[in-house]
Image (cartoon, rainbow, N blue to C red; front, side, top):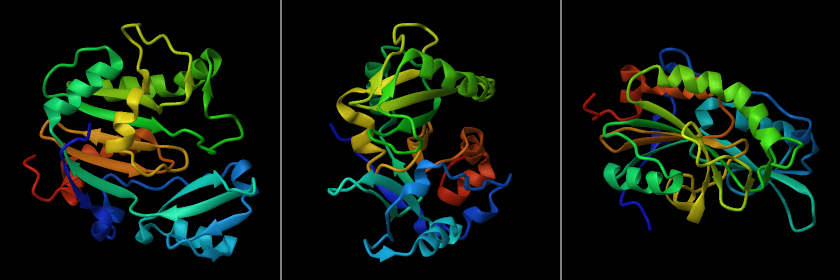
Length: 241
């Protein structure tokens, strides 16, 4: 079932988010796996040189993110996509109802929800992103637990990690403190995270139904800084903060 929403193209605001307060920046880390890309395509599907691809991708004003995949010849390709940011207006009660079904949890009203999303076949690292056993989950939680705790120190905020259907996730989904979940039926994938991006995506959902999605590798705590009223107004000028 689709969320009834109107999307906002944030690309026209690209020159403004360079001045977010506090400063928010794009991660520039590159894994060894990313160096094995055979072909690079720009946002129009044209083959480009590696250096030109990197230049376009790293330039914040271009408002681009990348997705890497294995082509029909078994070679790794990287393609640029736009926009880096997308805004939505959703039916908040319906959206929360769907999250409760996915997590088997009940959420209080007026909750600001921060989501991390991992895509099927993501080539972010050398490890298989489609198999999250208990050891890998525990290792990742050593990093995210601290960030989750910082986020949830603020009243009425919660952080959840979702994984696209098809990913093997050996989590303890019935534990009260569990926050790793499969996006069963791909509700989130079909409605918010429609274009996969390398190293995942983030979303912030506010109680008034305003949603901001940011694609590509990023730091969770930097994403949360978008909730600063000055920052949020850049993306949602009519927001009643």
